[in-house]
Image (cartoon, rainbow, N blue to C red):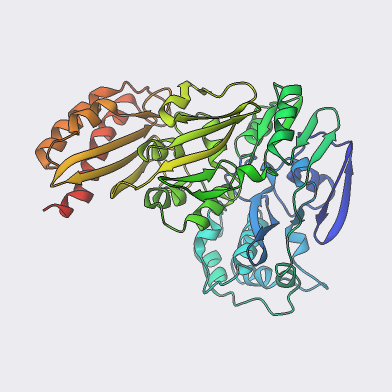
Length: 461
């Protein structure tokens, strides 16, 4: 069919014959809803932020996402709110009113900040205001203190607030979709439907959160004849504690994983805040992060250190691969035609000492120059087990096998670590690029090992 419908600012809208490559942001502006702005078209500035109403265990919640990274068909059956929809009866919303008190200057970024602030404003159980909710929203003229002050001044929604009432109701459920307007956009509702679609369209472009795929659509004008949207597959939306492992669904957005896990995997808890921004984490998935096979992705080093396995599903069954065997070359994986990443398994028990380090030009919301994750188990002061996952030093995410072998069984002390730092510096041959030189990356490998030792040595002093 060439039609789809969704709720926009509380009213049903129907779309027909719109190219599936069209983003929500582009369509909104064509429709005259120009509050949402385009600043970067890759999810880095937040000027295009909109709200999606998503299910949770207490009705629903409002989640801020980047409108520039939402393909219009992905919204079929969903509920979207833009900055224009927040006010009612010609009255400004409390968040909009707060931003008028010095938080807005040129106004270009203001709608995105208002939307992200509104998502936090309506968060159930909120005490105060979590400023991390504004990560991914950039301002270049007002400065952040007045915006922070506006956020911290917000109270609680009134009981009769229209959006607060809305969040007490269940969110609309995602269903299957077959949309065709030139290219085809498919959203299967089960793995069997997905495998059938993959058999018919083996070259289809898989879409989960879209935070990588839609950047290519926007910035490189990448085009696909068929999109396969994985967001309605319940088999990919799971968190399961099994015997000897925890299984994380490949399609669960990272923000949701963070809430579900609630710190129970400390290394992931360290990683989540350093992965892009809240706006991106509200859409990005583990499966997408692994499937892109980027050598500078932050997820793979963490999962390598955790000893993770990838569960690949196809019409003929499932197979499980150690993550280190999943990456086969630059941007290449062992995923075969007809397969999808269903889940990631992390073995239990976890190593007692684990850290994640990200070397980048900015601490937050930036791409790594080098990423390193360490997981260590000691016995009587000796290294009983260690895993080291790295990004940014090879064509794929890698483990430091030579360094791990060197450390095995040795005392966890300064002399051992100094020698191991020399091993890890010689284990890889990174390249020069605009993020850092090969020499800098090599130096960082040794330095990060020293840092990990400094943060764990006191346990045995």
